[in-house]
Amino acid sequence: MATRALEAVEEFVQEQPHAAIGLAAAAGFILGGGLTPRRLFRLGFAMGGPTLTRRIATEAFRIAQERLEGGQEERAPKPRHRAKKEPA
Image (cartoon, rainbow, N blue to C red):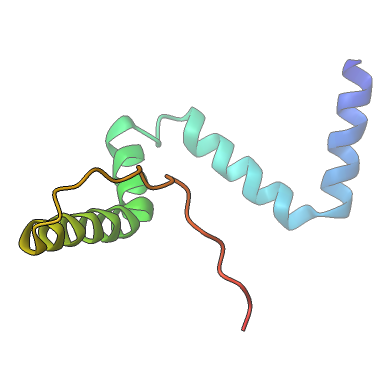
């Protein structure tokens, strides 16, 4: 099993040397302590922050609009997944 893994790694390195160097650098960075919880949080917030902010703003606007219109009736909960956009 170990020989198969070694052969697969060698084959990958020969076929895609640039990707192999990138993966090795990333692994060294992570294992060397470069990806601390603080950096991981910042990275996650940088990637997901704008989407989360937009979703919160949309929901706040919807709630405010319902309150202003007096729509206090019960509504079915909205689905939590984003609808797929159809190509134009």
